[in-house]
Image (cartoon, rainbow, N blue to C red; front, side, top):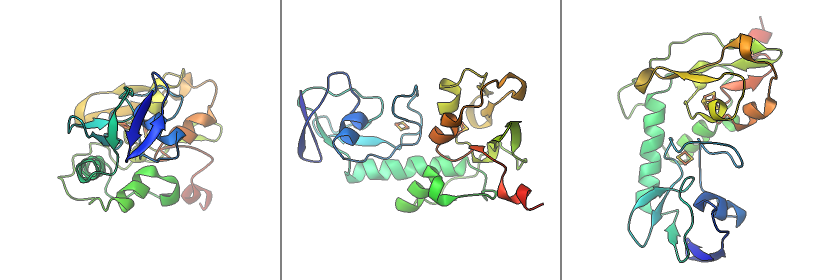
Length: 206
Ligand code: SF4
Ligand code: FES
């Protein structure tokens, strides 16, 4: 089966998603709520690309390739929508990211910089208050103020991670008592380092 991405003809596998086919062939499409080989639900709309046949802008992390597909991941429309998606996420994010904000490790920060997304484009809706990071277990911490509710931890953990409430008030809840096996891989797929191992630097300095 063959498709084109950015005018490059690629051999693709039946059943794979556009983002998988692209990355397997060295074409990077940005994403936040997708992690290879993990369960996810397309929610961030950062991975959008243009289907040149239909003119539609589609999420590449949830759209399965079809023979002859012609995709443009760098179209202006896709980039504009990507930027809007980032601005919406930023509007729902706490205004000042608490230390240790590590821009190099935060995919949201990196993409916002790359796409020149404005932190204040939309009214600030976040219901998240500036609270201290929650100590979960061992070296495992959760900082709700950095969480973009992508759901990767919720869909890929057996430790009772869940969503509380809906809409702008929706938050990830980690019942510390139900976390049995601290799973470092969850920290690795968390796009914003809301989940992290080891004590935050500002507490270490105390
Ligand atoms: S803690 Fe991280 S992985 Fe979990 S929903 Fe928030 S941003 Fe996503
Ligand atoms: S990465 Fe595709 S919708 Fe988030």
